[in-house]
Amino acid sequence: MNELRTPLKKALGLGSARQGAHHFIVQRLTALALALLALWFLWIALNVLHLDYAGARALIAYPLNALLMLTFIIMAFWHAQLGLQVIIEDYVKPAGSRLSLQIAVKFLCFLGAAMGALAVIRIALGH
Amino acid sequence: MSANARPTSPHLQIYRWQIQMVASILHRATGVALAAGTILLLTALLALASGQPAYTAVHAFCASWIGTLLLLGWTWALAFHFVNGIRHLLQDLGWGLLPAQFVRSSWIVSISSLALTVLVWACVLAQRGGV
Image 1: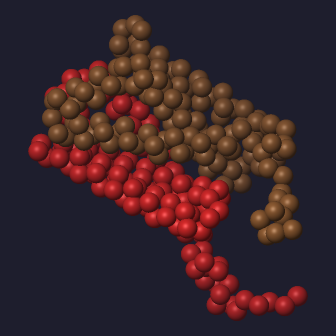
Image 2: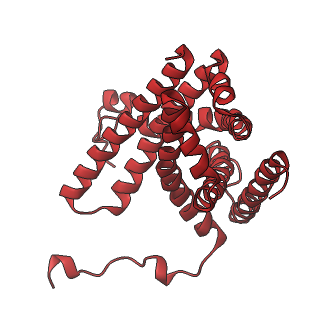
Image 3: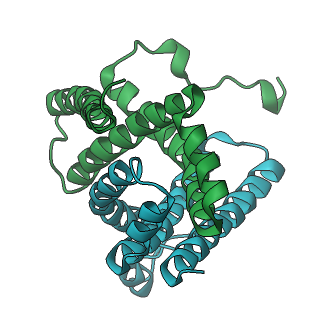
């Protein structure tokens, strides 16, 4: 059988899309981070439910919680974008709506992450 | 025959429903639901940052029947995506790929996601002091 790929091409392992397994790897790394963060998030959510405004704010403003909430938001929106991207690739056929949806999902996920991050920073700094 | 009318491969309606298929579909569906659910998380955080009146409104919404229903659904979606996500990570490591193991792990994640949801809401209700 003819080997059409050059040794360099095989060594780089980037495939025809020039991305290699990058999407696959980042999706799993964010998943692992979220699996760990979800346990902390559950604990926070159960606590916040029964606190008043000042108590809830103090809990999120506590440096470790603010840090983890910020990380959770970034990881969640990153993971969501990667997952929604695959779903759109699988089910949306028309090229126009497919591209528009991919762009919209990327923009919305970034916007969501930035909004959440800004809110956590405001809470943490007491503004 | 035009290009659009060509025969396509069999889709969902042709297959007998199997638990592996249910787990796979639910993983995607709960993923989309969780992405939509981030709106509630963002709303709560923005309200917490902006001040007491906004936070009280979000709290009242969460305590309403529609808010409670959304939170209940979201809890299960998170539980399922969490447990099934761990199953997927283990499968990525090469674990449990035989058909029998695949079926069994699909049942395990489906049942444990429901058990987790019940457990979390039992904690919520116990803290609240009744229904």
